[in-house]
Length: 203
Image (cartoon, rainbow, N blue to C red; front, side, top):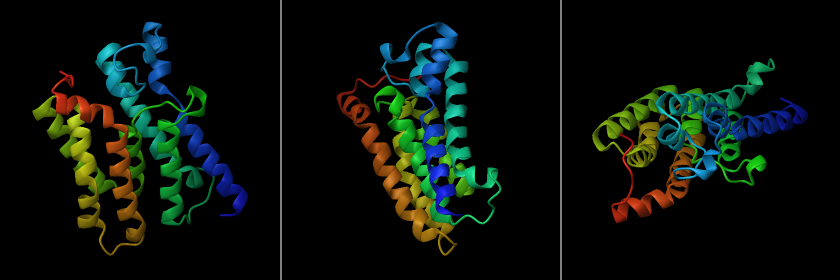
C-alpha cells in the first residue's frame, strides 16, 4: 500500500466514522434534532429512547457497519495484503470520527457500536463473545451503559484468551486496552449517574 492510498483510506475511515446516523435518522423519522432531546447524544441508545426501538436498532447497526467497512476500505479498493496495524489504525480513525465528528463540532457518540464493527472486522470470535456478554448484561441490568462498560472491561481478556500468539496480537491487545479506557472515558457521565443511582433503564 503506497502512502497516497493509505492517506485516502485514513480520510475515508474518518469520513465513514463521522456520519451521524443517529442525527440523520431522528431528523428523518421524527423531524427532531436528537441533540436537543433525552441525553442529547447522537448514539443509538438515545435514539432508541427518544425516537423508538426500531430506529435505535437501525442506528446501532449502521454505526457498527461504518466501523466494519472502515477497516475493509483497502480491500474494497483492491488491496488484499493489508498489515494488521493498518486495519486497526483505520478502525481507530473511524471510532474517533464517530466520537469527534468535525461536522458536529467534534461532539459525537460514545463509540460502542462503531467499536463492535471495527473488531468484528479484525477479531470476530472474541468480539462476538464480548457482544454476547453485552447482551446478557443488558438483559440482567436493563441499563445499556452497564452492559457497555462490562463489555469494554471484558474485551481485552477475550482478545488475550483467543488471539494469544496469532499475527497482530501485539497490536490487538494494547489497542483493546486503549479502547476499553476510551469507552470508560466516553461513559464518564453515565458512571457518575450510576454512582448516584440516577442512570435510566433502557426498558
